[in-house]
Length: 264
Ligand SMILES: [Zn+2]
Image 1: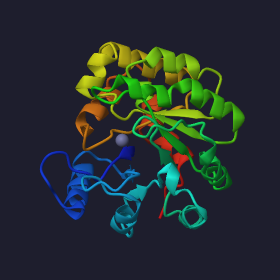
Image 2 (image 1 turned 135 degrees about the vertical axis):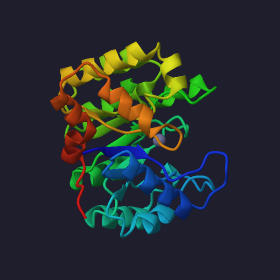
Image 3 (image 1 turned 90 degrees about the vertical axis):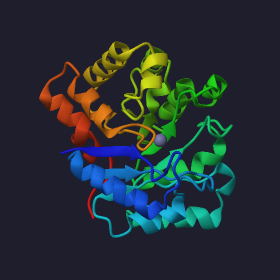
């Protein structure tokens, strides 16, 4: 079984409807034997990437697709919190993602508190975008793992997933997350050629994943960041890791099944 815990319903260059992209996604999943996918919306209106409202229509009645909730920090108010609460309660959304670095907002910003409490209440993960944006290394100051460390220590019951391993500074991210049993990593974008090159090569990526899974067996979940990154490259990256088949199964699906309530 494979669960892709991080992808988007979006298009890159050629304009497509979200319904067409969803069909392409489901076909690609069948072709690559991916059983379930967790779709992450954009937190601002974006004609190229489905947002919360679009996505809840798109994944409804799709047995293989699940979704994450998100909100811009300025949109956290009583009515939106009630909506997220209902989405969590009904398992319409199975986690919440924030985008520090896309937004000039820190993970430790106090305005996230009601969202964090909702994630804890429903035992759903809080996902944090990390790393540089292409051509904009300065944005990584907002998602520095030192803040994630503070958050993880302050909320030991909160399950935190770090997306993109704070590329290109993988070693620093590994060190900053030492001794934090509530911090997890997804593999999204780690098989992307630019990410590999800037992070010190494919051996470096593999080494950090092996070190991480050996440090704590449940700490890595599989994700791609499709359509920006490829299904095949990410599947091949995990298959090529010098670890046991059991650990590969943990990455491909078992750890996700522990973190997310995947059933419809
Ligand atoms: Zn992504």
